[in-house]
Amino acid sequence: MVRASALILDFDQSVLPLPDSERLSLGEWQEDIRFGCTLKVLQRLAGEIEPAAADRSTVFLGSGDFHHLSHLLVQRHAERGEMLQVVVFDNHPDNMRYPFGIHCGSWVAHVSRLPFVACVHVLGITSPDVGMTHAWENRLGPLRQDRVRYWCVGPNLDWMKVLGITGSRSFASVAAMLEAFSAHVDATSGPIYLSIDKDVLASTEARTNWDQGVMRVDELGAAIRLLKGRIVASDITGDVSIYRYRSRLKRLLSGLDAQPEIAPDELLRWQTQHQSINQRLLDWLNP
Image 1: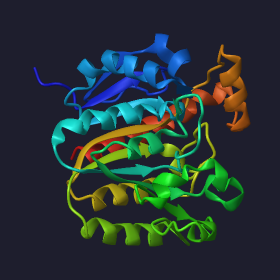
Image 2 (image 1 turned 135 degrees about the vertical axis):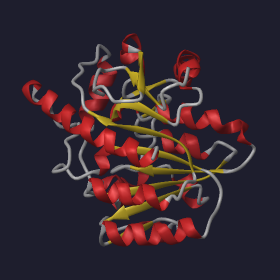
Image 3 (image 1 turned 90 degrees about the horizontal axis):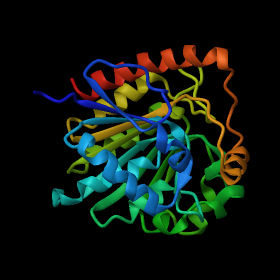
Image 4 (image 1 turned 90 degrees about the vertical axis):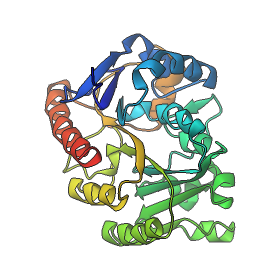
């Protein structure tokens, strides 16, 4: 029996059905994993998802609140025996400080420490998280060591030059960013792990429960094609769901991020928009 190419990790029922996909029900993990968790809890989850995730080309994570699961999925490639580049499309750097383990905004720093990861490239950032007033919140070590690079559209990164950070750049448009990234891809070789958070898209393309970037879906498709068959695996997040944490700490921390509210009567319409985009992404990733 041939396995489906895509796996849906179903914590929050946000990902609507897709052809050639299987679904792993993980609703009982939602409170513990969503937004953030300890590394011990994350590794315990790894044992739950590993049998289902084996040999899958694309994994859907659900809401962007679960983006830190990308750390588990990248970690699975330790046995490849070659250096891996990680390419992330996201409106946020996901390289922020978080003192309670790992969360959806800090996982990039953890991935950059894996010895087989050459560099993590985060593309499409428009968030003020990379601005000077938020500089102290970013993990500066991986940026200085060129283990993490920001590819931004709009934000001023002059403060980074003062700190000796030279690998990150900001562009006037998505087109200019992709042109520069294409040149980088052409100048390098080796496998690529791709992670897509759909909050990189403009809100006119699809709504997420985070503040959003400016990319169009067709620009994201063009970016995927730039990688020219080098993608060895991928994950997709940024789908939408409504959840109220039992944990007071998680309610507080998620509230500080000022996530946009989703009206219950809008939820299915937004999820249906994502279903269409998810299918297009699968078509590009698995032609």
